[in-house]
Length: 284
Image (cartoon, rainbow, N blue to C red):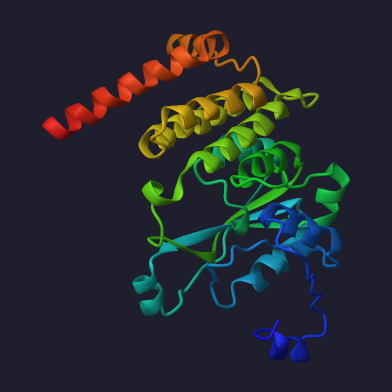
């Protein structure tokens, strides 16, 4: 509050929500509920907006009234940021349906809410919010807005600087984060129940869920060392995604069959596979 006191004197349209720390999902949900503007941007606290990047996006948003606008971004470490002197940009954009954008452009490894300008009325009309009390909350949220949106804009305009290099998977991933990812996978899997989804959307949705599923086991085997903790994570996954089914290859069908009927055996097989990979990597 001390840091922003001067800003409050200059900008009377700022609303302060002073609450106990309840995690980023609840903070975002409360912010979206109280937002009075037509569009909403949700930033992470350790990243940066590119100077003068918002006006152009707002201009096209107010003109076209899309459900959301997807912008571009830079990945930069702290040294790159210090050397960054801005950028010259030529504004280009495409108008697409949410389905087109979902199938053609959504990278499941880049579910970043901070690059998206969100229409407040769209969020409230579709009753879209973040899953409380978990990390990886962007994954089900991003998939839901892409699936439910009718009209969207994708632009090459650079909006955001995503800071990298200040944490790594070895130190940042643990059992609690793995269990949060299980919940995020479960909430994303539930989106298959939305009425009227095309075969193309269902296919892409399964592909994206499998990407998160594969990352979960890779990160867990890399960073969660306790066998007991790994079993808890697998139990959490089975609880949040009962009868998980992957259909797009024989290998995936076998994986989901094992997970549903013999989850600890599946975990053991993955552990053996991981040991074999790491052993061969060391010998090379």
